[in-house]
Amino acid sequence: MGVNLAAVDLGASSGRVMLGRVDARAGLLELSEAHRFWNGAVRLGGTLHWDILALYRETLVGLAAADRLVRAAGSAGALDGSDSARLGLAGVGIDSWAVDYGLLDANGKLLGNPVHYRDARTEGVMERVLKSISADELYAATGLQQLPFNTIYQLAAEEGLERAATLLMIPDLLGYWLTGERGAEATNASTTQLYDVRARGWDEGLARRIGVPAGLLPEIREAGQLVGALLPAVAEETGLDPATPVIAVGSHDTASSVVAVPAAEGERFAYISSGTWSLVGLELDEPVLTAEAQAANFTNEGGVDGRIRFLRNVMGLWILQECLRVWGDDDLAGLLRAAAAAPAFAVLIDPDDPSFLAPGNMPGRIEEFCARSGQDAPRSRAAVARCVLESLALAYRRTLRLAQEVAGREIDVVHVIGGGSQNELLCQLTADACGLPVLAGPVEASALGNVLVQARALGEPLPDLTAMRELVRATHELRPYQPQGKPADWDAAESRMFGTR
Image 1 (tube, rainbow, N blue to C red):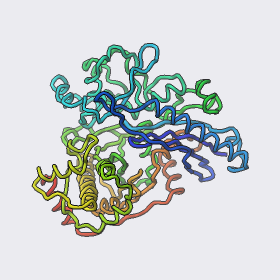
Image 2 (image 1 turned 90 degrees about the horizontal axis):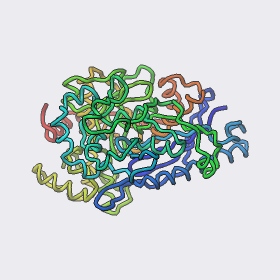
Image 3 (image 1 turned 90 degrees about the vertical axis):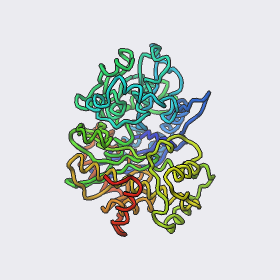
Image 4 (image 1 turned 60 degrees about the vertical axis):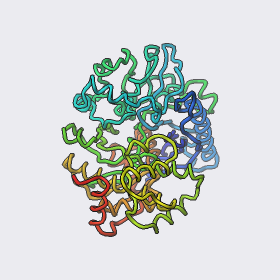
């Protein structure tokens, strides 16, 4: 009969509640959008926050909409009039971005809106923490890439931490409000730099050394475990059955996305989860905690079924998104067509330069970068877009070559998943830069991975990641891109932008 599931999928610029229909025996895996809403930073008193109450409200609206869709389909005889269709949603899962959190007091009340990871409060904090805890020690325990907004540095910058009783990552916070149950799903916990990647649990000694109160970090739960049933008030507001379970999924959206990478069994693949950020890396069975991995600033984040996401964060399409916002331009398709015709390698930037992290006048920052690096600034919007996308492709090339070298793993194909898989120019440039075929899609990878983990927890015959990926591959169209152009041109561009290694 299959199951009907709600995937609450929160990104850094938008959120959505997706209705998933999964019947593994019948080869069915479908998604439809129940509700989409804006998400982003809200500045108040000089601090960037997330509007977490708005996200919760929109989550409830979306769950109600998804349940109505399922009930309407069952009443109309869709999905063969299955019991699951008539009864409404069979489960709910939540995924979001990483590193950010909410703090609860002893009574379970939220101590203020969560602070946005792009807020300036962590400036200089990483350097201060590393004076008392060495980078080598941190990497040996957590295996994480050093980023100034990692949770450990946010907590070190937190004021009034002694008033907090529980820390909940964003998906866990929303799950708590839906069910009343507190916990920390492992894939998101692994992004905090307070999680021992080998022991697969909190490093409580490390937490104490940065002043985290005892008991602040809740019990770890794995993807696929039950969070809890809906609270009566939530069920009443949404119209869902009070017995509807909330199920822990790969709550870091990249962990869910990687579940849905449509790789064939035995395929040697890399992935680029492409959106506001680009998460570029490999899937491994064990973490790589060598000096070489640390020097290359690779992260070892937890994945579903105990896998390791060996990757680096690359700034992603955020830079282009901010340019469009500043320009007031919503014709992305037209801009990309013009960018495809613009001269190649005219201007290059390092997407990971710290100047591109915060919101603001991104075209102006590109001009400033060009001035610092001795380049003429791009003279048109198309030239800016070409610059950003070629620079991203170069960053992907550099990252994947390093990943193979450090992990001792060769790759034959690159899977681009997420919203950026729709950007044909970026996908082609990625194939050209890497000298490897690119398979683009699915677009809604995080929501697909979310519902697949839920479906397995509810009894669908999806015993492992191979089975999940086979279902994705069988039900979703992928767009192939073959390398074009001259590899020597990309060699020269990489040397020009990043220097020789």
